[in-house]
Image (tube, rainbow, N blue to C red; front, side, top):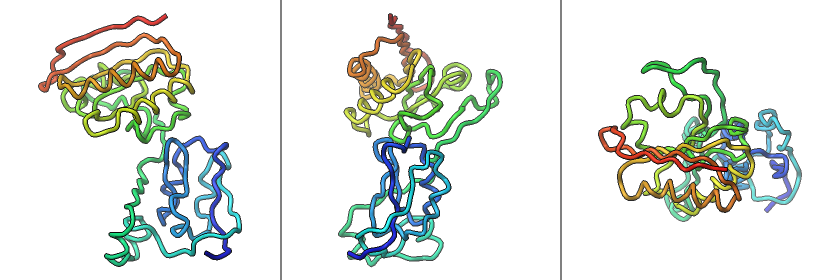
Length: 246
């Protein structure tokens, strides 16, 4: 441990937009549970390249006792650029650090409804695990909760399901149901969601999306209109349900 300059993240101000993540070439910052976190002190060089990227002013530099800077995280942009790698023994002894520059929040302007052409996607990211509950594109939105496979199965996915909606997607088979439910609960609590459309696949594990949405509404104390569309592997609609809210 040594006294040095290091990044400080104000969790009250941070809205989880993710704009600081790609600006940290050393891979010291990651979005965890919808908030920016300093994942390892030793990866932060304390130079503050990320400071100007935070729209909320949640990032500052402080001087305190911290682990000495050892170089960028394995797999980070700086490590790849300079060819720096940890010794195999050290890398194997530590938990891998996932750094995703693609988690930076973005919004796009779209006009009209696509007919087999333009994309209807209006924001990024779309993975439920990466979307911040306070993301501005969720405010007052119609929410689409989609299985990862749905967009590949349905040729008219953008025009029929995505247009005019904010989307979060995931795979219940490979993602933790409790974690998905917690994130959806936070989204429902933080935003005046108008309704929810679920597009899942005709496989048993995909019912986890429906279960997560139902549990999240109970936990958030919300009763919303829910439309459930289940697709077959060839993209055909095999079942449709509507649950009316208050």
